[in-house]
Image (cartoon, rainbow, N blue to C red; front, top):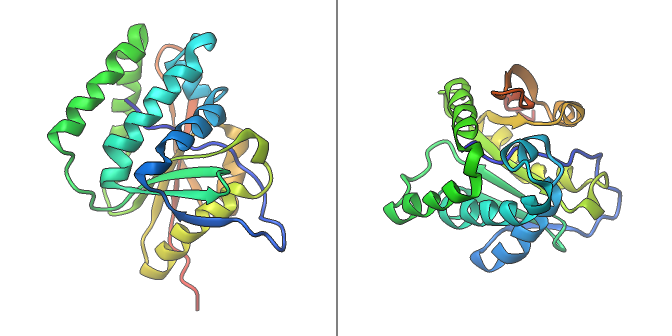
Length: 216
């Protein structure tokens, strides 16, 4: 299963912004799941994996709940932009191995995918084959609530991790599922290193890498 792609590109945060970025906790899962399902309901990869529009939001909620509870909150880093405007899931360069119970929990994806299981599995393997092997932070998902897209939420949410990566000399990597968002990530220092076309006429994903930007 391919990780949720980044979405919701936007511009810089306005002056005087009082929004706060913080680490997410288990108690945040409910509203993050609802927010991300709204953010991704029209995403090309979400539509490819869950082609039935009437049930896509429900399936996305289950998908993001599994990813949060049994992957990113346990092994990675999850950040939110308060007040409940956006969320981002990162995997660090050396994550802990998944626990057995978390691996088993992901079997819950099988009934969600239904007839799209094989195509989704092929896409996941294609992305894994192109995933960089050198140490880096991986941005698995970033999404803003539709009411806050285009208002600086994505830029504000990216800032703390990118600043830390700049300070420590760590690259970052993501897969972008919307061509219109390539420029947004380019503004933050990411460059396109390749692209993957999903099987069976699925969408294109742009592979993007960012070298650290030391501040002198």
